[in-house]
Image (tube, rainbow, N blue to C red):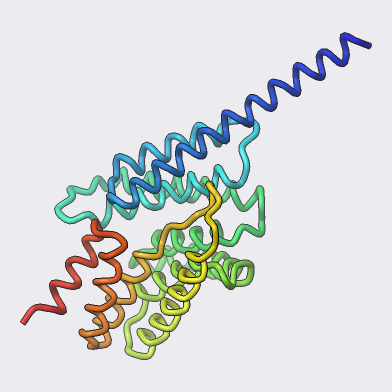
Length: 256
């Protein structure tokens, strides 16, 4: 009997140690992700992704690990696609997209009510469509499924609204759709403001606010409201000086 309890204690100790190791990896990954976001540094996004990958391969891995792994790959993808002057490696970008989808699908399997994972999946499937009608027929229903789940599960989540607005921005082609995009993004801005007043838990996501402001600026620019566009580009740069899209936008609308 003593031996039995000794074995149980040993197993419990190993489990606790494994959980502690995963928590340390995830915490380090979030810190690296935050630094990567501020500097818009692809190498640091990749480093954050590796930390989350290590955490997610542990038997104690949770939806949090896979969510952050997907978020890191998603931002690595954006960095590859959008950095000025970058010689984007198409295969690397596609690999990041596929890795993000895989991680986030695991996240929603672990927690089918994880709104941000659904929002990211909807966005990523939209990116897979590109300009292809054939891919739209295949991925379109997945976009709608995950988008609708995200909104239903996280109506007050700022990243859910921001990602929805980002997708609307890339698909809108008429003024009425631009106005709808603007309404979504302005709603996200208010939710980000509310979120900023709450204490931040160590593993809680807080990314997206400055990018949301940039997209608001771009939407105002599309609508021909240059003064409002400049206002939001400046707001974005005040929070995220490395935002090259906001810098370029501000230069455009201030050009005489």
